[in-house]
Length: 519
Image (cartoon, rainbow, N blue to C red; front, side):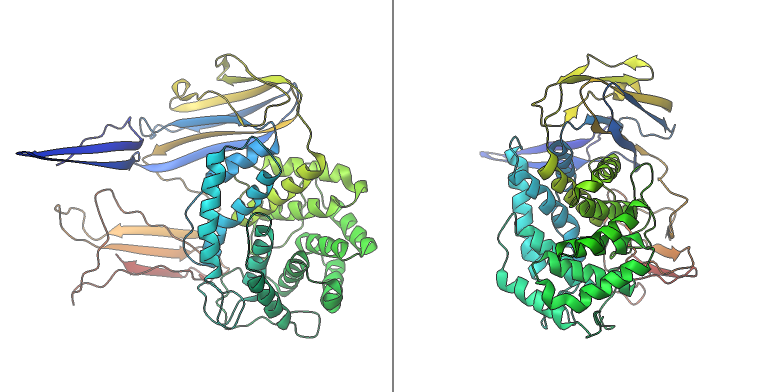
């Protein structure tokens, strides 16, 4: 039996089948997630909507948009709570994959849960779902502990130093929202400490699968020391390693290392040394509030994600000293403006952004002044202004404006009447017959079917080519290969057909290298 679904329908649908045979009857109900045809696209923006000010967002909807697939959202966040609630909802996913992949869903939830502990007005359903998913994540994460201690992507030996430090940070933060095995934490710290080489740095096992990013040694050493200090390790036992990080930070222009070191020195009581590094960060803060000059991070981030990580670490350091209050405000404002559709870039940048927001809110949370927000689409005010009061805690969601849009250029404006400065986000999502691409991408993916025509029930092959278009190694490339609706992947044991190739965590070397396989 075949059911026709029109292009206007999308989302969850309950499908019920009733059957009769004489005096017997049965009924089966299934929930289906109906997706629009074509490729998903999203164009969005975020920023700070200032008191009695306005912000404008311009975008173009292509003629190739699939009819019925368009959705829109415009949201203003009266408190960091509202922004973090949206972020948590966007990141609520079942954990999967290796240690690093599981962390990508669990770690941001840990930071948001920390916020929920000190605030009221949170939707209980969100808290319950997040707690249940975090429980599953914790059990998965602890299952990746190496036999000889430390953590590795799949629990093999040997453990990986940088990944273990990342895990130690996560488990330490998790302690504030759930119970964590103290013995596991202790042996993880002991293993990391055993990796010291006596020269102020850490031995990095070359046999470990280093797709975590293979960050430079100075970056890795600074991050491991920060993780140990944050987990409660006494500074006296790390004197040589702390001194090495300080020396590295004083001589480098890499602001990611400088920011890590500033946090380490302040936490260990070297306030004079910390201030010198904080001043160095100040000299690299741009007018917009972001901190420039970072080379890479522990996860080999780049672009916006690296800028968010470095700025968040700088804000966390500056927050310890009242003299840097202005730089904290500018830095945090820039971080908040980086929030698009509930996210702050990559997993690690989202974690550090939320960490800085939580720390700031604990010290500076204040109620907002009452006001109104006006939504305008292509010069036309959409509905009545949305009012709020000083007690408003949830996100202010303005009406959808799907009916106002069609193919072509559009302008959406948000205007604040009275009120106070608040972050906002605007997103337009749709499906298109053409995929979305970027000129900055370093990986090329090509899929070619062996047969142009095929009968129902038949079998064909897809040749998948993945190429590195840059001249440098790319850590942890991931290619998601879609399967057309109504198709499924199969393994056929035949001397004439090869089994499907499996794509796993790997590293593509520079220089136009590629990998192909049949599915």
